[in-house]
Image 1 (tube, rainbow, N blue to C red):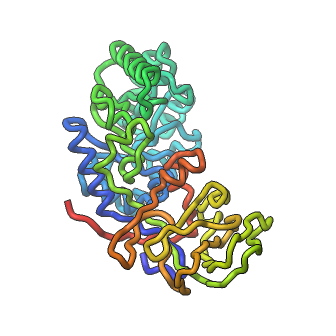
Image 2: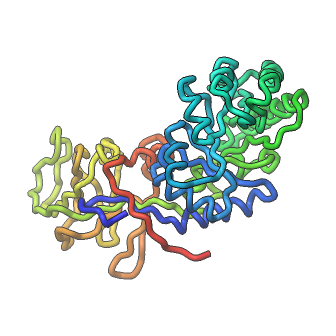
Image 3: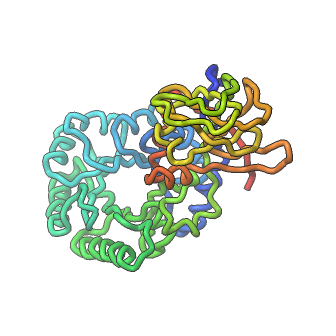
Length: 380
């Protein structure tokens, strides 16, 4: 990707992605690792992330949509690609055409696949052990597996899996629930023929539940250097955040004590100060409420509060009486070094905690109109 024209962009540290994949692989060995690159690689750019993850040792990829898998295939990526839930029946032909591995849990979708005339199409059976989102009920899993067998050689049962609901939480109730989910999966497997792959662990379980690692782990948010939740924060210290959200100051002005700023005029200045305008807003993925919950950016290596409501394309920052100029670097997410040589960092988790959400939503929310600029930064 070329250098962006606009003064706002996301730097994607591909060395951090590679480091995180290698770190997780070592942690979960001898289980393998498949990288989850749905939602455009959690906002990081699916193709670049997928190539980097495979290069660092990931043995497969996971996506949410047929379109996501097709994008990877058209980019020349030949690794196994698992679609994590059933797709519309009319997508069956494209699943087969692009050699994607579908998830099944209903006969109607299974028959839609078979109707396209594949031979030996690998499918993974998802079992709902407690998440209660999608998947075959444990009592129906054996019947569904039998239905797959009856449709051979068009399809073959290549994997069985489930998804954890609270693996990122470390209280006793959550730990017990995760163990119950794993036990339910185990009982299902006792009723089924042997399959090449059995998988259950998301990032949180990959880190915290060795017994859940099985054939491979589906590592998502941890690949991007973000903790799956506070219950496993202590297991994420070796991971490196891969996204930096950057901009440049586009305008500087002096404002008077008592004046107000931005839509609704909700912020009133208590003193004369310097205000910098930054050309990035909620249409780019900066939450509109961020200023109301103490959101900050880094300019000149110092934290500066966002003042007034974040607007669609711009936000304003109180820079006190410091010397700030048009074109100065602004870091919204990531690290910045100041003139004293020290650096500060703003992480997605900081925004997430302030906004009562999760780091996933922050990075996935960085919109397509923000250019992604890959870079290299670290050596293992």
